[in-house]
Image (tube, rainbow, N blue to C red; front, top):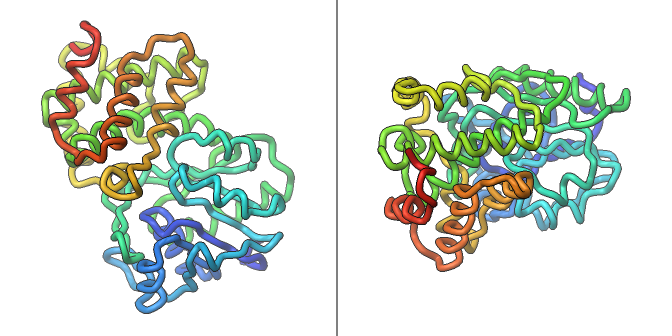
Length: 340
């Protein structure tokens, strides 16, 4: 057994990623407790187990967040939305080995100075009140360090990666430095999620609808420019490095070809921000995506991200339902020359 097999392992958040990780570790023979704030999902999991579409159902301990108490020496995989981090971190002992597998950047989490993180490039969607998930786009789980690690932390990281990879639900790639992968995921998520969630469209429509595609490509270029201006290293996730994506988007005719190439892989994929526009009192991860990019930009021009942040705030603040017309509102609010 891997090094962490003698310690309690908790996965916080029974969403798409959390359920997939819990299923993988359980399938590989490691005891895991899944924790979620939704009592309906917990009750369903206690009764019928957890499952990944196309695979067997597994029985594991699953408890509510109210019941959860983290022992001083334990493993915790943090698979919740970033806006829930504050209440979770307040209950985590400093001796807990925490591995966030989230999207976006949370300033409070950064202050904890945890050693490792994971970034999922596979896309998964979980049923709202049931721990049943499906992989809507295959991909990898990159896992690695965000600072220098102690020998124990290195051992923990290696054993966790081996255990997750043994189930073969997704590919696990151990990387020396996770930060370039996290920055690259931010580049893409901060372009996809706000647009798809506001408009209430499938991710694939960002490459078929002309206005959505223009906004999507413009956001990708602005996000890339911000990260390069801030001297943030980037990594390849998927077929192209962000440098190549930027070059393609700035070359006549190539963006249209790239859209045709990627449209099938995005079709039917889940936008994790979309449900937040309809539930959770309008709380979204927009600050962990777009807000973080704006803070990185400082005085560097980022008109599209600022417009996105403002419009998402208006839509969620007023409790408006996602509609395609918000993309038109966004386009009309931009200075001339932003969209080509």
